[in-house]
Length: 317
Image 1: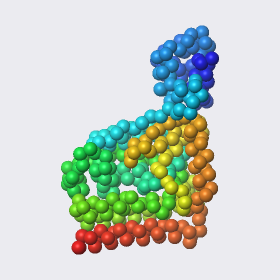
Image 2: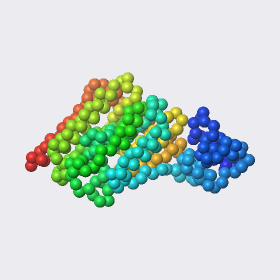
Image 3: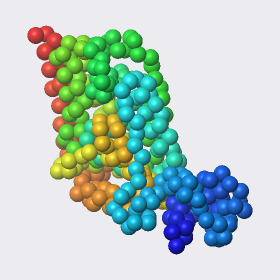
Image 4: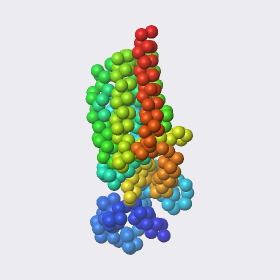
């Protein structure tokens, strides 16, 4: 009974075109015949093999055999150094590329902050975000200026792969009026602390404006690859749901950059239903009228200009 249940769950996880015998043989590193004997119930999975299969196919044995509400999740590593951050970006890329970088793959992003995919390349804004993350996550606060950080920290292009991946799939982002707030507030904080020069502060504000402008240009009716939704009421949380017609993965934040990742079918379906419901209550800016679209983006531009002016005035004082 239990072995049959395990086999059924694995069958649900794999690509419909793939042989379950081959999938199990590959996961356990055993021969085709040995896998066939287990599928035909002539041999039993050992405890070690059962655990190995559960880990390989991201199955929750608790949920499967005890009918509990437990969900098996993976956890991203903690970030306490520049190398940790680089490894985090590399591992995030590996987690996402389980889904092919093409238009068959979709991604929903609940953008509490500017989506991380836009701030992980090699530009000044991306390097500033790394500086902020390390200040907030490192047990030993950096206590150096952003300019010193720039001169002492090597250029890291590992995040660029994530940026490129994001550009190759179908994306639906949900924003609200506060999505850019935290990044602007970070610029203001480090400027007022004397750890960021006014010149760089203004450049960072300009780069945020350029980023938002590039998104506005993409918000056109016939762009099915990128769709931006405006939700006036929903409190966003940086959840990410990625998937294709065969399977999905849900990324749930538990710290600033830390995520729990699950492939649990029911949880991912609930998340899908939630996103689709919220999209119905949002305004799709791609197809919104000129007035509504301009109102949304102009509010963002005005807020950026306000912070840019404050960076300049604080420096003068």
